[in-house]
View 1 (tube, rainbow, N blue to C red):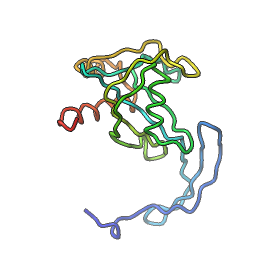
View 2: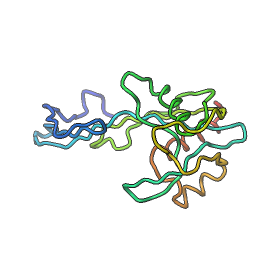
View 3: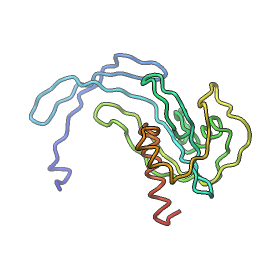
Length: 187
C-alpha cells in the first residue's frame, strides 16, 4: 500500500455554487487530476442524516412501510432523518424514532458512519443501534411518515431484501451492520 506521500490526489482550486436551498446545494468544483488535466466536476451537498436500527428482546426490528415518490416504489425502512444544525447525530436518531414511530429508544450506540455516493455526493449518514424502545404515543412528525409501523423478526430480513421489499441504502447498511454487531457477541 502506498504511503500518503506516494498517493496522488485531486487538487481542488475552488467551488462555484450553482443552486442552494434548504435541502440541497449544487456546486461546480474546479479540480485538477493527477497528470495535470483541469476541469469542473459537479458536487451535490446534502445535510447529514441519522438512522436507527431499533431491536427488541425478541430479535425484531422496528420498521416503517413507506412510499418513495421519486421511484414510485414501496418498501420497508428504518426510522431516521436529517441532522439539525448543531445537533448530535445520535440525538437526531433518537428524536426521529419517537417522531416517526411513537417509540422512545432506550439504549443507543453508534454503528457506522458512511457516505452513500462518495464520487459526487456529500451526504454523511450515521447509523445507530437502539436496544429496546417503549411505546409512548402515536407518531408526532409534521407529516405521516409511514403507512405501517411494525416489529419485523430479524430472521425474515434476508427474504425481504431478496424480494426487494427492503431496498434503500441506509436501511440495508443499517440492518447488515446491526446484524453483524449483534452476532459478534459485542451486544
